[in-house]
Image (cartoon, rainbow, N blue to C red; front, side, top):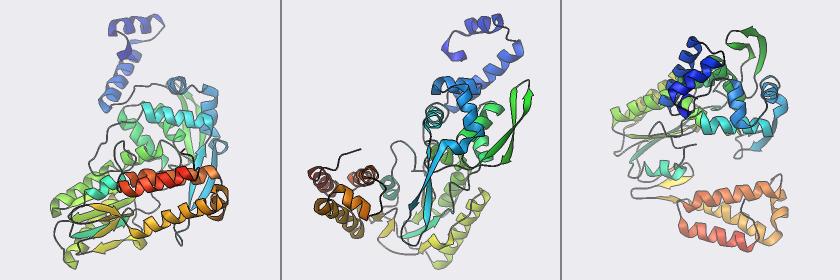
Length: 368
């Protein structure tokens, strides 16, 4: 990388190893574009393999035989809402994806309204943006991750400044369900053809940040809507919430809803009509599992009761018996689940979080 050594020394070294002036120009072009985007410049799949500590041969196997590098499992959603498929990457694929996340995707949050998969942001942070709301509109993007196809992921990497071939290879590494074929080699390296386009997998470390980058156009359109109506809008992955500081008429709510629907469609997504909620007026609202009022946010009673039911089950019957009775695949999965809820609670209700932690520790539920 040009930035790691003095420019003149880099130029001399590249030319002494048989590099050409046009190659030097291309390297500098990639460097400048990537650094402007806040990502580490990389030029080929080999460079990615070096920082991921994965052999080039294994990386190529990941690209062409991705199905053997994922284990999938279905997790039940809320009753009546079906299942979601979680994909667990193999060790080398996980290393490649982690290298991409840490080096090839911007670390800074790029929009004010996105609260998922961003450092320092949370559901409670999104909810707090709506404190003082007198009206609320909730919509949900249907099949969010499945709707983000490999070509859109490729466009993200290309726009960040990476060369076309590497952008395509990283898009494939970050996808699931694809099928690619090798179509020979040219002066830029191997060429590929998509036989079947993939999608972002839930479970890959790269999917969250990539989804936010794909949604930059959507976020911009949503912010324009909120500015026109004097409201506040937040997006937590597929969950969009819009509020205003005054009650709205049903006609106004309908107008805002159709504007949001149009923005979602123009950005390559569809809304899930079953999850739309339009509340023209009120003093308290529920969003992302939290209650939002005129001065603060809090955990609702049903949520606390559900968590306390888990605590009671563990205290009475032990971790393993309770985990099995509630459909968890292992003690580890339950512990990850319950401590995840602790992390969620501690940002909203410190008193309840302390109760949760104390009872878990007394019951011997180790923190993951």
